[in-house]
Length: 198
Ligand code: 5GP
Image (tube, rainbow, N blue to C red; front, top):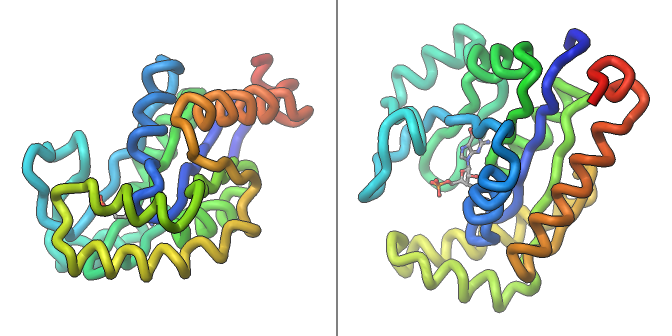
């Protein structure tokens, strides 16, 4: 990574923990922050828009992108494939803009392995009961999906110690202020603050 690069931030955590809500709240507080749009083989849910929520592709296209090294990281989550487009990520960071990736826990660890300067944040549920409650509230998921996601979440939670930071998402505003504090502190790291003057 060259100097004057934007901050690469990963917000990860189990399904239903509230990554989307926290991410949107952060984006509205930090107008300079950009959100990465992932590629997925999952079909669009009602209301999802191509290029805004995801780039929706078939498996053939996904594997083509993978073989051409066009994905910065990728993972199979439940029955579908998800990945972060490399070119867009690098172009935003090279323009000195901060970029947030809202991705699963496997992807977050891959990002850190490739970019040691990335800041990876694990959003942790207040309790498993609360996580189940939040998963049930999501009308788009069937009861089978909810059970699958809860089972998966119990496994995902175990890797939180590999993250740079853990933030409990009890109240969204609190989680957002903690993340803002983390980003402020990260920008004061000597190798960033001297090269970026921020
Ligand atoms: P959903 O299908 O509910 O939109 O997303 C399922 C999971 O995939 C979520 O945990 C979401 O954060 C994760 N995800 C979305 N995009 C990516 C990506 O580009 N890479 C990885 N590793 N996970 C992703």
